[in-house]
Image 1 (cartoon, rainbow, N blue to C red):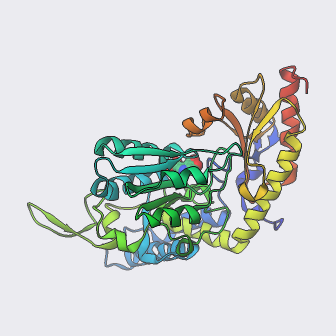
Image 2 (image 1 turned 120 degrees about the horizontal axis):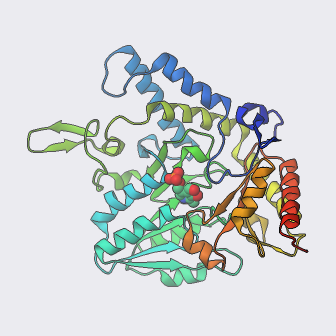
Image 3 (image 1 turned 180 degrees about the vertical axis):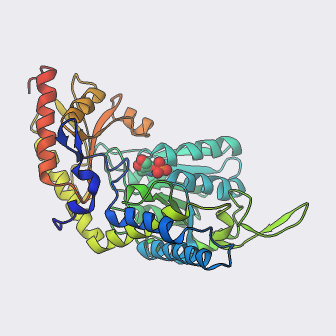
Length: 407
Ligand SMILES: Cc1ncc(COP(=O)(O)O)c(C=O)c1O
């Protein structure tokens, strides 16, 4: 990776507890480069106005900038501009699919397939939908190598399957999911597929046309963009048969005293004033990621993961939850230390200036299925270097000392 990347992220110069910050909690949220911070400031300094409804110059400028980012998002994932809806995060995007598509299309005794790798955001909306419609939720299990069991998946599919919901990359085990294969198998039975790209889209190339999914969701904040911006890709052919998710200004065509008509296409899903400034700043993040290159980022993540696994697996008390082959892994490493609570691990790492996550990672069924109550997790991004992992290993040794662990 280019060595000037670090300079683009001012927060990384911070000290935490007297140590230089080492940020290894990227699966939760990423840090933001100067280009994003400057775009945000520039919008409020020079272009702030509401969009779509004004006929003055500022409003036109803001509208153009906002709509340009829609086109940028589409290009980034190889979709059409009119297939991109802005939401507030991946969670809202998934809830929108559950409400706007699911309530119309899921009926009693239909089946919804979810995977054992899912974040709560791609599980709980389907649980609720299934409950409401008296439909059944089916689970794709994991293999012993933390991968989706595709043979079991094929057995679950039938003409009763109406929807398949899978992540492209687990935020706990880092497992990569062969979404293209999962989608083509589901389509043979006429089922629609929702892909949760929250962990994958900022870390490797996404090609919507190639994978042919029906819905794809992600959050800007995990890919160098601001918080408060999510994306929902909806295959154009499905949009008109969906109901709006929220009602109000901007999504209506005409409004009478008793009833209203709604825009067709993506405008139907963006009621009220959207997060204009943050969407525009997200455009800066997309440009930055493209300039570095998604293939280079994916390679870098894998290199760091291989190195971290090598460093951490030297210790017999450390148990790692990660697929064995690097081609099946994203840059996430969950682990436990026998006899130490993961919160204590994270606290000791924090004392050394290293930010990691510990807990259930909003994936309680998955973490429980690993046979542990919680895990500690390192997650990498383009500004991390091998030195960060060396420091993490040093912190690991401190945990051993504090808890008198022999390896
Ligand atoms: C795999 C996955 N899906 C969905 C989400 C939800 O993202 P958000 O909280 O931005 O809606 C996350 C967040 O950690 C995630 O890791």
